Image (cartoon, rainbow, N blue to C red):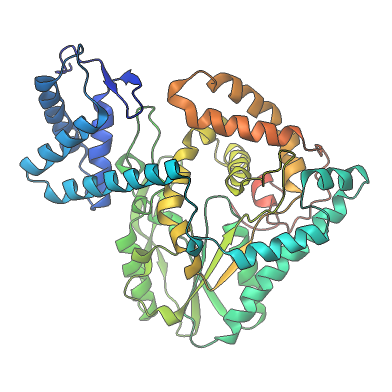
Length: 450
């Protein structure tokens, strides 16, 4: 039973009156606790109840509080109840959100340090040379029956990127002990890791892959929102301390026992698979958060080679704007999750704001720490996505149009629908090679990628 009295609504920052929810307070407190290494949901719930009581002592439905006022009370309660470190994390989060809102309002540009301009220029030049730098030109080539050629040309450019990374690693043979393949969700990390391993093995280097997916905390320990959706996109969803400990032990020649994570049940079992490497082996890590400092903290940076992959497509839509990289990855993940993880594509859409928030906080700020950047986008994926997903996006756009709780999903659905509408669909996917990293998402890959 709620102690909230007659408080049923609160004001958002923009003045919108929305339904009050204690669960939102619980989620905010628990997120701050998780960021500090805590995972006590029961305590978060008790603290949220305390906050609610204080709010109801000071406000009523006739005069609803602003969200900021509730956040002020959260800080006060956390400090009074002896959770000063969690309060500090909560305050830092509020400050970061405030800065993001300021940046959005002023339309300030992303700092150049986060954008690989040189690589983008190379990709743009390639796209112009191959007449795929606009949707109009892509459609013209498809109409001429050149879809197979586009596939071969794009894959050749991607393979050249992977080979270049392998060459750089080989040049530092003897000094490199860890190779990290990092990048945002659905950028193509898994296939890139497999291909990179093949090239390096041909050069005589011994590689041992450390599967970071087995280091996830149990799903029930992740923060959950009002819709029951788990936020497992943050670095804190991983047991970073254990990863760091195991990597250091492996480098010292010790044997470790890797945990096993069951994605079906969302549970982890510790000390399952034995792993040991020789003094000449290289540890290969494929991870969203491979560039995040805590994962490899305390390890000599000169012994780590960092590869970053992103869908750096340089193609203008018919509205004159460049197609967004995040939209490519959203569509890839929809197809992959539906086929290989029994995850409804609509769930992927409504979950995507977590993906983007985590990328902006914990991945993109570290892009230029990479030793080499690979372009994971291929222009031929768009006509395939047009055929597979266009009708879905039309449905989602209509479904979420008037839903105030799903504004993010509506805006994404509307934008992607408009973009796909102008692209010529391709139904025959057979010209896409089995070695293509795009098959990591649509199926048919010769690599073990799932």
